Length: 166
Image (tube, rainbow, N blue to C red; front, top):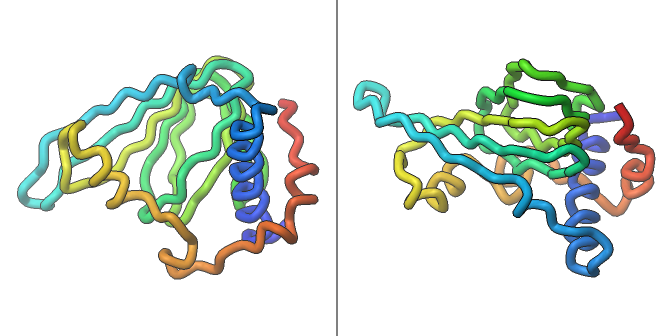
């Protein structure tokens, strides 16, 4: 599958989850997925600080990550997850460190209770600035990143092919 087709499949999965929650067909499990925010103070020499976002996912939960503006490091600290991205499907088992490239968007399905942490450089180093941090590190569209937007309508059938079994 091409990168654009896989991006479309992940985006379609996200849209399907959002629609399913809105219609009542799915239960929004984000309240079961606590997020802990960690901040390191800014280093003046580099003009930024470090923000870590730690997400706990109970077994059976599926989430779709956000579209990132910058490459960053991520760590699966606990558990086992099925991951779908433009690079295909893979199973990650903790401990696992990986690079999340510019424009990466992934769907995660927790095969076991799992903890995922992402690390981002930011000018903001306080929890009160989470919206500002999101503006720095998250993009609403692929076009804003200089990438081609996937045509999700063409790829809803690809979504049906995604199997979440380990």
